[in-house]
Amino acid sequence: VQLQASGGGLVQVGDSLRLSCAASGRIFSSYGMGWFRQPPGKERELVARIDWGSGSSYYVDSVKGRFTISSDNAKNMVYLQMNSLKPEDTAVYYCAAGITKYGVSYWGNGTQVTVSS
Image (cartoon, rainbow, N blue to C red):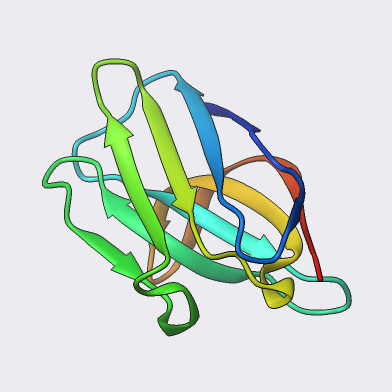
């Protein structure tokens, strides 16, 4: 599986951005797909995850109510709609596939999101 993330940029506090992740290769219905982020000088964290088969989702507390993860299985796309962006959302965002409690099977490239106050 190859993943290509896009959609990052420089925005102001309160703005919105939509990240897109294009996946190629065999994606199994059991796969968890999602987005991680890594702020400057900090560890990478899981932001949102969606189950490819059921569509059920998970969000880290800090983005609940502001971010929405979705998928278009026919197009092999995963999206992250980010609203009400805050400076603490500034990070490199990574698309990932095969997310389990044991780790991640596939990583995409990172896309920079910078929220300016």
